[in-house]
Length: 432
Ligand code: EPZ
Image (cartoon, rainbow, N blue to C red; front, side, top):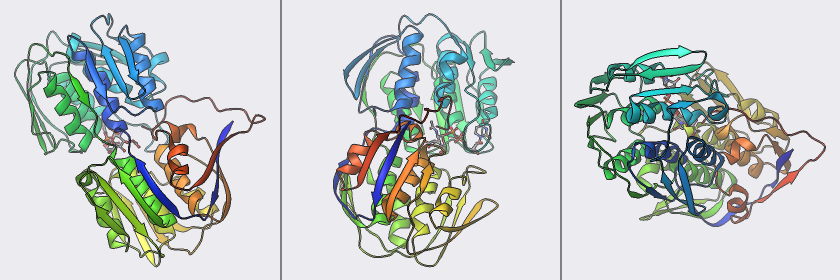
């Protein structure tokens, strides 16, 4: 089994480039199913979640040409089926976006659901299905295969009780070729929603309001190919910002959109970290033990839930008492057990983590419970004195491109080591 081995306690220095946004890429790649000809997509992160989504498209009959590791040309003209079996979807939660894309193309989609995930229990998709029904689709669940079909899709008004990134994406994909006007109210406003809308509009769609609570989509007959570059990953950038704040040092994080990082910057500054914003980079300077703060993870533009584990780890080492609440996922604190084993003083009370800052964490064998919990373990290992060994690192490699190389470039003593006598775990679906 492969593990990360980190000798912690070193300050971070140097600079890194942020890759393309995972959560934009896993929505934009299935969106190419709607195009009548080739789409060229640049700045795609070379990570497992993207590789799995590309593999599904190829198995569906698409042609994918790698111009380089981060630039693809995708031709979905010869896809011949709207049925995606579990064998193809079980490795990626984002495969449910194929429902919206296939429904948008064929007015019919039959996709096996990828099942639960490592936090939040079984990830529900009731909002997605409600949205499809509002567009005129009838939905049945056939042994875990969601079957959505309509004579033809017609626009409608969809109100989401709770902000949902996935449901917003899926309805956008289904609605761009539906007849008439679709209005999504209480829509998600994440940067990756805006990125998807920009991509769809470049293909000839008519999507307005992305980034606000109300997205309007006027159906068009056809969507053509286009050339597009994915936005930088807000969460990858935030992860490295918080890593430098926790481990101390002075780093420059390049290829970012500072506006997407505003809530993270605000919280780090509140704790006494120096954050200098440039046009397309941010500089983090942290030279002393930081202060405490209260953080509530909320939909964008709130503090991102995908930064909650990383921030909790940083606050575990800050002075005073901090409180982190997750307003998006009900039980996204499983990773705290690992931090406590390293000496953190954290109590979970309902949806909140009550954190009493400690001066040091000590190294221990730990595991990555899911993608962002794994990122938090990396930060804990960087800060802890001694050698921390992290297992189940496949979670981390799903969403962080060249993570060992990037961290080594910042002076982190980290290596990926194979432990041949330990069986690798079977990887199926996972939180994404
Ligand atoms: C997306 O997941 C992201 N994944 C997640 O990032 C992220 O944590 C989440 O949005 C919130 O920002 C991708 O973009 C691939 P939601 P998604 O629908 O779409 C409830 C990462 O680390 N809900 O916004 O699945 C749900 O239970 C991953 O990159 C319903 O009740 O999240 C949750 O409480 C982890 N019914 C809340 O809404 C539904 O039909 C928000 O979920 C859908 C969601």
